Length: 327
Image 1: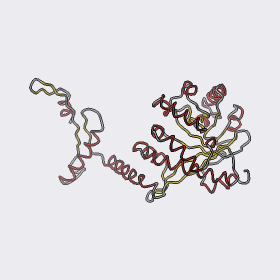
Image 2: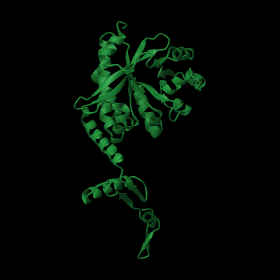
Image 3: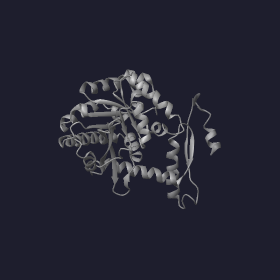
Image 4: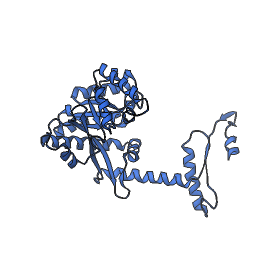
């Protein structure tokens, strides 16, 4: 196969013209990959499809495991398209508290999928598929509406200052209808805009800086709060914090886990805290699991904390019990 591929590395001449061609080849072996012509051809075509995914001339051998993974992904994509209408998606809510007082400030909405065959699906198994296929737009709209509606219901129960934080992916943020969706959702739910916080990652900020800045400004003009999630794990830059109208930084749990260990978190976290204070932003730590971490964060004048020291993700009825009579 290497010799065949090499033969296509040189241009072909015809009528004084030269043509550069690339070839994609799929290979399967008898009898391991099939015992009849129909099966062998089908499996060779499957391997060729994988070869086509690579640039230039390429060849791939049939790999049963790779095909099974691809088939499983296709099945998941089809099921995910029907998940919203079938009511298979649901939200859990993880509380965010004041570091100093422990008072609950808000919850973060986390989407979950209970697949009828595979059971409870981890978000890292279906959110990337939703992003790649564009399904995240309809899923994200549903999450936003449900989270705001639920938060307004909790406020009506007496938890009047409770806010909600909702993640918005780069794919969602790039769509032109996002602002209209958020405006309509606030009107539909009756939630005041200051109680909604939109969480974005740093990757959102670098995709189209001009459009992003305009969208964030429009959200701020609406009264919606903006948080940068997973700060420090992507394209961290001081210019981002100065250029865009961000209210809150959420530092990634990897930094929180290091602040009482043998790593460099005890030096990085204070540096981040000093930077945030200079910019007059709020600072929230994710992944807080111990009292020692909380004490360290309090000394560094953090505003909020989120993690299993406080609570893991809760069902909506569990949130009410968690809040108790502290409205």
